[in-house]
Each structure stands twice: as C-alpha cells, then as structure tokens.
Length: 490
Image (cartoon, rainbow, N blue to C red; front, side, top):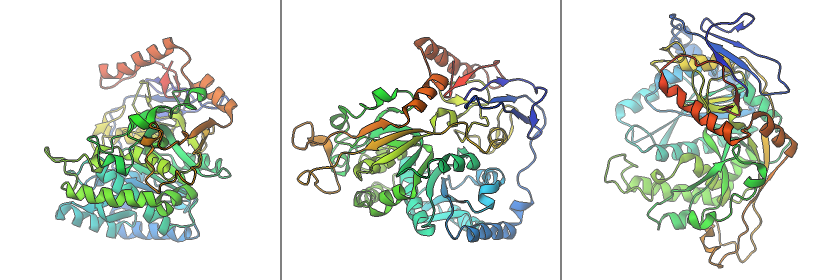
C-alpha cells in the first residue's frame, strides 16, 4: 500500500493507544493508508496481566472456544515457536489472539513445539505450560531446540502440525502455519480468505517459486535437498512468470517447479492440505526417509563436522512445502497476498519489503525483538505493539489477492513411475514431462496492481534500493514522508 511515516501526531488521527496513531483514508479503490508514529518516553504497560496469571481461567476460555468451533472452525492456525520463547507466547495471547475471530471460534490456534532433542528441563517446562494453557501443541516426535538446525525442526513441525490439525478439526475450511516472529491480523486474513471460498484448491500467501530435487536425486548429490529459488510472483509480470519453469529441471537435479508461500504465512484450503499431508504417498515417504536421515546425522546437530547433506538441514522449510505440491502433482488456485499485505517489519521509512506496519498489513514478519527494547520508542515489546496498533485497526483488506492458475499436465501411463517423480531425465529424452503452466487469472486486476502498486521504471528501482539502505544510517527516527507501492518506495 501507500504509506507515509512521519514524526509527531497529526490532528484528526484516531488514537489507538497511548503510543501510536493510525489514520486511514478511504481506499482509492484500495491500497492507501497513512501511518504516523512518534517518540515518547513512556513505556507500554506490562502484558503479564491477570488473564495470564489466572491460568485456570485461561484454560477454560480456550476450552469454550474449541467447543464453539466443534462443528468446524473457518481456520486452524499453528505458530511454529522456539521452545524457550515464553515471553513471545504471552505477547501473542495478549494481542493477536485477543480479538473476535478466536473468541467466536472462527479461528483455532496452537503454538507448535517439538519435544525430541530438548533438554529435560526445557521439556518439563513446556509440559507444564501445555497443562495450564490449552493452546500449546507438543509434538513428541519432532526435533526442536537450539542445538538443532532450523530447517530440520521446521519441516518436522510443519508436517506434524498439518497432519494433527487435519485430524483434530476435519471440518475446517482452511489450514495455516505461521512463525513466532510474525504478527497476523486474523480479521483481515479471514476476510481475504472469504473472498476465495468458491475457488478450487486455493493456496494463499506471499508467493515465490522454487524447485528441489526429489528423494532419489537428493540422496546421491553433494548438495542434498538444496533447491533453486526462481523468484517472487510480484516482481515479474504475468507474461514472464508464465515461462519460469523452463530450463530448471536439470539445474535443480530434477525438481518439479512449484509455488510456495514464504514462511510468515502459509494458508491451504482443506482440499489442498488433505491432498499433501494425508493422501500423497510421496510426502509420507519423504518424511520417513528424511526423519531417519536427520537422526542418523545426530539429530541435525548444528555442530561442525556433522554430515548433513542428506538431511533436511540442506534445504529450506518453505520451499519444501512447494516441493511436496509439485511432486504430488496438484493443480492449484494460487492467491498471492503481495508485499503490500505481507512484509517485513521496519519501524520507519524503508523499502524492498521492509516497511512500517499499517492498516493494510495482514502478516508482518521479522519481529525478532521478543522481549527487549524495540520499535519507534525503543520500548519493551515496542515493535510488536506498534504492529498490533497499526494492523488491528482494520478488519477488511484493501484489495483481493492476485490470482494464478497453476496446472501440471497429466503424465502418460508409461511415464508415471510412481510417487518419486524425477524430472532430471526429461532433458535427456528419457522422460518427456511438460513444465507446469502458470496463468494469471483476472489479468485486469494484475495490471491494476502493477500500475498502482508496482515499480514502473529502472529509476524507481534505483531509488528503492537507495531508500532501503537508509535505515542502517541510524537506529531510530523518521526520515520524512515516503510513499510505498507494493512494499517498495517510489
């Protein structure tokens, strides 16, 4: 959206709390918001209030929410969290989960933690937290903790969450995962998803494309599961994105090109989640082989000298979900939320996806200061409270997601060699597999977004890069008014 970050309160702004002001303008038809922040010496109130100390009351509240959602919530969301980050979980409960969607049972939410490889002291604390708060999901057979390489933990937890959620809430319409450095405006997200409810096989998020080698190739290459990133959807025009799979199978050791949602927010329609995590035999075998390799290599330990080429440590968690979609041969409606709705956090003027939160923000990522001073005021929980104040002001997204049709041509009977589809033989003439097709739906909406929220010239790109470097010049403070289009200043 179009954002201006200015010092000092302005007359006519709506006060959301004691620290931040957010004023909205009418959508023009969309994508325009003005956010204003200023310094203050005051410190936000402590969030460890009575609702957290009265654990019995909190547990009963969650039980009531689940009971109301017994006939099927709209959305089941799991947040992948660091086991030791209790302060962030309290913060999420006090802000992101305090709104109507969770209270009404439209959204069910769990903090997802793995217990395997954790020290006994940490696992005991987590079991105690889970006993007092019914929003913690403990995965007994998922690696987690500071000693484990992050991709290993993430992939095992993501797979564990989706398989659990599909069993626990089989009537849910949507299944999602997020991360504990991401704030999600649940009201806006539900509104965005509601607009997609009549479309088949929807996959929603900030969309990129990648390819990973399948099991057969990954186990016999020095780079293991290391994949190829092919670019983000928003930075290329529909005409060029249509051709992105070309030439990639050989470079990526036979990986099937596919879209993936970046880590901050991955949302799948029930039919997509069920196909990937329940019915696709490739996903099951991928996890069986990968989990065995993770443990053979010392639980994906971070220490040097450990061979990790055949473990999940050699890849990325986000691309792996796209890999499963490609290997499971799914056809999708891809809904790109764009950099306007999903972006990284910056408390003042930035660029290239690093911008201040606004009422147009649905998922704000890279909120890394879990407990220390941060945000415009350098206060405790500052960046998270800044995001909550700005984003929670709106319940409706400014414009619909950009839609794509992702289609994988069917294989001939003699070409279907089972679940482990290795496309590396295609270039050698042994297996002729056409690349998947990616076609823009509602091309007039794509054209409008590029015209309204896109970079339009090389000069604009140079200015964006220059603006993106400015935040490193000083720890805090505004640098004046900057307009943002698609998460980039122009």
